[in-house]
Amino acid sequence: MNQTPTVSILILNYNGLRWLKDCIESLSALDYPAERAQIILADNASTDGSVDFVQKTFPHVKILAFDKNLGFAAGNNRAVEQVDSEYILTINNDTISSPDLLGPMMDACQSGAACAAAHNLSWDGQKTVYCGGRINFFGTGLNVEAPPDSDVPFETRFACGCGTLMPRELFLEVGGYDEDFYMYQEDVDLGWRLNVLGHKIVAVPKATIRHYEGGTTHQTPTLFQKSVSIRNPMLAMVKNYEQDTLQKALPSLLLLTMNRVMVHMGVEGYDEQSLQVFEQKLAADNETDRAELVMTMANLAGLHGFLSLLSKMMPKRQRIQSRRTVSDAEIFEKFHVDLDYGSYRVETNRGVTLLQLLEHFNIANLLEPSALDAEVLQYVGLLDMRIAKLSSALQRSQLELKALQNSRSWRWLSKLHSLTRRLGFR
Image (cartoon, rainbow, N blue to C red):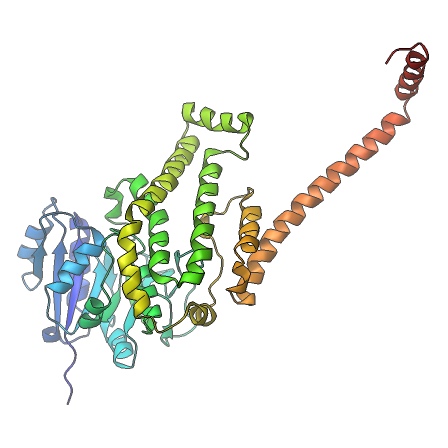
């Protein structure tokens, strides 16, 4: 008779004292044999008394204390390296787990999935914030926030890092979380890598976690958070796309990012008057303009960070591509990859830019028609709206000109013009 697999439950913590009591109490009450599950606090050099609190309050919890803040990726990787269980479960400190969290996830893994993802709910438990994930053409991971239709596990692109169950050996074999990402999108990159290598990821609706979200990330400067969110999809793209796809996707994303810089600067053109708008923002003292300046700098910092790490990505790319078993085309078809540019769309010329990129880089041939049509129609609709506005303005101008031509003033002007010409004036 097979024994229940052993699991190390890894709570990565950095100054998260306020969350630890509820988090550990819920994990200690899981419907899973206690002797087969070890709760571990992986602490990133907290200074708020987290380690002392856990040592005194939860003596059954093993503590791995790091001497500096390693971030999400390296912190979890070091923890996985130091345990010897069959499976690892990564979880955030600002969570409360349901008693039946682990059982359904383990059932999914034992039934053929390489990785199982928990169902993340809002802190009040009323809303789904993650139940499955997708990755758009530009490498950004997007949570599926719609409540699941049933409790049946289903295949998905990536597992949210808050609630990922995997065999420890597989996690290490595929390289774990990429430590150059530091934070954000590491789980997306890991999922993408598993897709490429032919491994199955499933979301498990019954395995629920209430997740506060951002319980400790507020300690990280906003500009850095936003810049890595822009940088990391580019890094993942370099590692995981085939050469033909990368040659179309990466230039497109770089150009769209530069266009986004101009949008946040408030610049719609490259003439002197347009660029003066940005100068005015630099001198402005209001919250809206300051927020736009932060996003301008975040995009530029993200681009700089990408270029700085590009050389480090190439050996990783070579390792992944040499082991690839699933093509980009198969992934696009299976998961209906689309062009969704996320929350960065604004009413500017970006829509026109994206259409131009579709044509210039022949992206349309890479994606399923169903994934492309909605995007193209959306932007064509934007262009049609602008054409309609121009047409309406032209009609108004023509009516105003006709009214002027029928006026007495116009007739006097015509007579005066004829008289001046007869007198020899030009």
